[in-house]
Image (cartoon, rainbow, N blue to C red; front, side):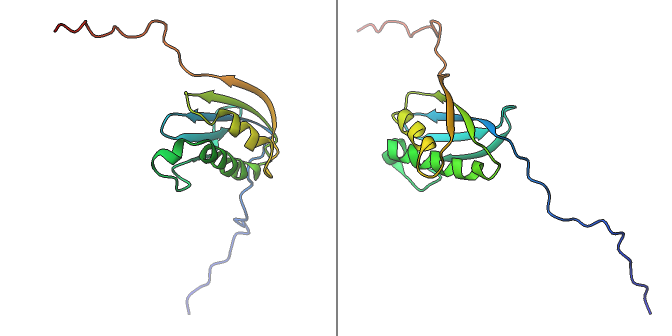
Length: 135
């Protein structure tokens, strides 16, 4: 008869989910899509969502409604971690900037938005332009 193994008593149990109250919402609003990423203060990604991920295709991905829904979806994923206070950072020329903030403050999410900042990169005279066209 084979011997039965005895357990050592080290139960695997549920792993403890990290919790934090402060975070940063990064909104990348381009002409073609809107991507919302929520991170903790160190920059570790907690949740993210985009308009394309929600099923919007083509020109509808860049609409304010699509950006709003992407923000709500990402916020619902991050709310599980106990997130309450957020700083919002915008990047890009997209149309849905104000609507993302409205979505984060309402619609069942109710984050406390502490600050808004625009981190769109601006060139300081940038690349050399192409030479003049001769006809």
